[in-house]
Image 1 (cartoon, rainbow over the protein chains, first blue to last red):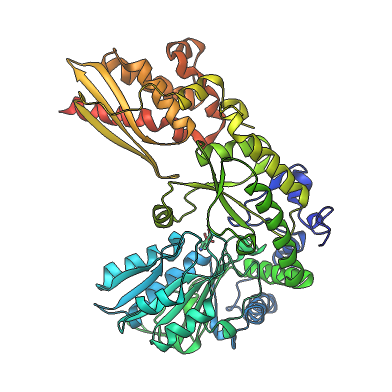
Image 2 (cartoon, rainbow over the protein chains, first blue to last red):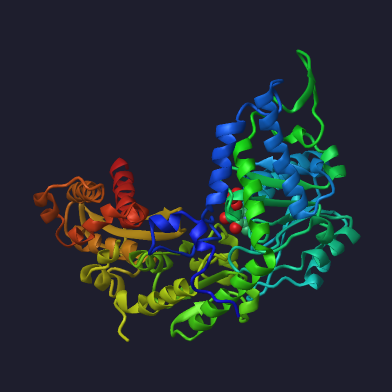
Length: 409
Length: 143
Ligand SMILES: Cc1ncc(COP(=O)(O)O)c(C=O)c1O
């Protein structure tokens, strides 16, 4: 057991200097940013800023280097073969939309099937709904059980010769549970089906290796990974990206343009139209460096211990129900819950009154909430910079919620 | 921040709403949806000769939307639709933090929700029932 108080990393996050009493437990929505990331963005704009990939002068080359070095850092971080497979986007949502649009244009026809997990975030659902509507393909759902688990047998049974693609999160933002992506990828590939993995909640909290998982696509957001908002990543297998048409068009994604026609730039720039977010990419590179300096082993252990602490205390509180697995090991820093008789928005307001940030609502997963039969839920989600005393304050407030909402006892 | 919004009036209307039930004599109904949380409620009214004779609501929501709607029904039952629309205007003014003490007095118990004006995230909750009322009365008036 590591010492969870006097967390040495908390001092890296200036937000806690501004709000010393803040208990921030909404890390699945977005994480706070360490000073190292902020400094790297400042350095980019102070010392390296020009329009990248365009200019022929020294500063523009510096900007290009900052941007492309960030791409290389991401490539290494997720174990991709080539930087051609790393496309910068704004966030996971844009990455998923890019796949739906471009993969859809290249590979999805009327009568094809697209399979999606029922627990998916709206960002990994709506693009597929739209694609199905536009192409006349069929959207099907893979159901999970009440513990949030998907079974490989169910996946096998759901795949047909027409299933072109299966979209699933590695970690659900409601259950916090890891799905067996490698096994799913193998099942999909045996069927000739491509697999899209939403890594928004997994990449920040565990080592993720695309070659090892053998996924065709992986999407994630920088801002949930201690990086600035507005920078996200799409990993795609090179041979698929080569066959897919551009998503957006305009400057910086072309090789040659005539009045009527254009030839597109090579990967990955084909998918990065317009002036890119080089400052954000520099911040993402610094965030990756920061994570690597702490080490995932350390991060995972801290997050697991804090999760276990919160989970076991929560289980002991009457009228509190945890959504998903009975086992704290399956929660990976995300605990979604309800309090009998109290609407989740009111739960969040009571926490807010005590200076504790938690999320309430349907967490952009309405079909899942319909599936498990609750309208909405509250969610606490932690990161390695949280401390034991954050969990204690969370638990202390949780114990008072019903009383403060007018229930006796 | 915000704890004092859960005052006795609000908590009481949330735990013991008088008007949370079906209304067999309803002459009109309308649904309201709060897209940020997915909460929805239905408002049912019995209107005769421009007077709201009875009313109720159904649906689930947070304490603020439930209590606000219940208090609203207390206030508007027995009044003319014109009066009800006037009260809605006052309530919106109060929630936007721009209201005189006299006007608050007109709102009677609904004045207990005044502090919502300091919680932008919950304004939609407080207005859910009222907005549904306005929509319903305007549609009825247009008929
Ligand atoms: C599982 C999952 N997928 C996708 C997203 C969308 O991320 P973003 O809003 O950064 O595009 C989120 C974030 O809420 C998420 O939790």
